[in-house]
Amino acid sequence: MNKSLRQWLRAWVASSAYPWVSGGALTAFAAVELVVVPRHSPVIAFGVLVSAAALPWRRAHPATAVLSVAATLVSFAAGTDLYIAATVSGLMGCYTLGRHRMAHPAILVGGGSALALVVNLWHIATWHPQAYRIDLFSEWFVLTVAILAAVSMGDAVRAREETQRERANAQARVIAMERRQAAESERAAIARELHDVVSHSVSVIAVQAESATYTTLDLSPQAREGFQQIAASARSSMAELRRLLGVLRTGPDDKAGTAPQPTLDALDELITQHRSVGGAVDLRVSGDRVELPTSWELSAYRIVQEGLTNVRRHAPGAHAVVEIDYASDRLAVRIADDGPGPPGVTHSGHGLVGMQERAALLGGKLTAGRGPQGGFLVEAELPW
Image (cartoon, rainbow, N blue to C red; front, side):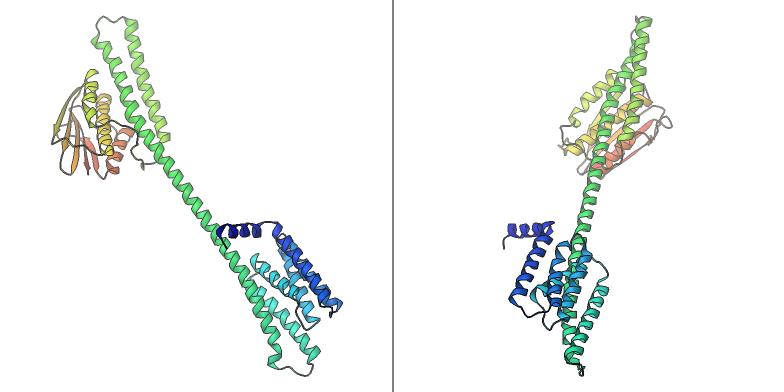
């Protein structure tokens, strides 16, 4: 039997039409069997027909399977032979009771065995009223074994389907959890990139607008007020940005994006931009420049970018030194300034947290605090 045929059979058995088709077919077979085998009493005919006719409702109303089993035993008790239709109907009824767990399997088997014993005793009393030998109880033994097998099979099918549902539900929960984690990771990555890129640009705008009021001597009062408003708006935008990023950042499990990102080759442009707004900074590179993986290049660039942003924000006018050291097994990044240092810089902002996360994701570490000569110092080691 090929796979497509097996799938079709499973779908048909699971459909709502299956009980009616199988039950109707078995009822028709029972009628034919009663015609072919005419030696039967009305009780036997009634039991055989009822046992089969009750089966079409077994899925919608599983309790009707009790009627099939009882009718089968009644038809057998009224005669000495089990009709094929009655036998199949009784076994299907026992299977249905176990399949839908109408009661505990032990109760179902015990009840069926008790009824089978009653039938056996009736036969003994009818055909062998004076003999109660052990061999006369073979009917009870065979019926009990058949009932046990049918109920056990139904219960096993039910247990297997419950296991499959539980496995499917567990898999669905795992997939949902992975999707939530992926969404949280993506939000964290977006928040970090927004902070690194937007905050850097907005802080440059604020510094340029504010410095213009001091470097341009012939500004009119209106122009000077306009520059001050630009600076105030930039700082307000930074505050709002940090608030929104607090909503986006749901966890530290973020990864570097796959889109083209800045590398350490763009440090000269970053330094030039810092100087253009009045910041003093020196760039010192030691070791041989090597091409690093994208994650290392991006993380190192963002750490320097955030470090210079913090200098402009918390220590305006301070002199900064950026050091990049290419070692054989690691990349060291150091940003130091001669500003006032802590406590002017808080360690709870997204900037320092983002830098620490970037270093941790690459197996490195980042420390930030007061430098040996004062000011503020950020040191990161990114091994590879």
